[in-house]
Length: 214
Image (cartoon, rainbow, N blue to C red; front, top):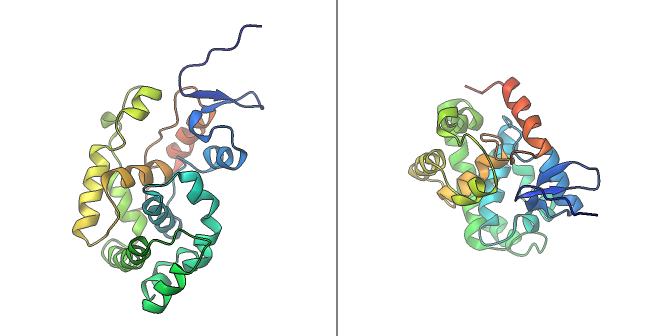
């Protein structure tokens, strides 16, 4: 039997469906790929969680962070920004002693700082969602075709650079353009599932009916 040749970057799962390659067939990671990554989000708590965890991921694999996500949620008050904003030095020490999360002082202190900055953004724009969705790129700025080469060519975009710059000007930290682009991918501001991945069309359908906050 001749082995099936799929376009680079696609994997066919045991269910017969083609997916982006990066989950590697690991069931937990595949479920994240299928059900969450690239689907539009407007809930402030989920958005804050996503941008915080993308910052923690820097220098690590996303699967490492994903496996610790429930621990992160417990440690950071389920990413309620108002609660995290009130954390003090004792909370930093508590978190540094928590083996269930990534114990990085800079990233922990950044999360508390960013929670405070998120409250300021909410005060100014009505919600964190209303603020971040202002940076959604126009369709004309997106690639006409999304294949493996397109996805891996550049881990940033003009939109992620603009959002990163604005976040930094507002006092956020650990929000470089690469981290912000990963955040935009995860929360569905862009649909970076490859052509041929069955989830791509589902995400496009979700985005078509999604009401942008404002």
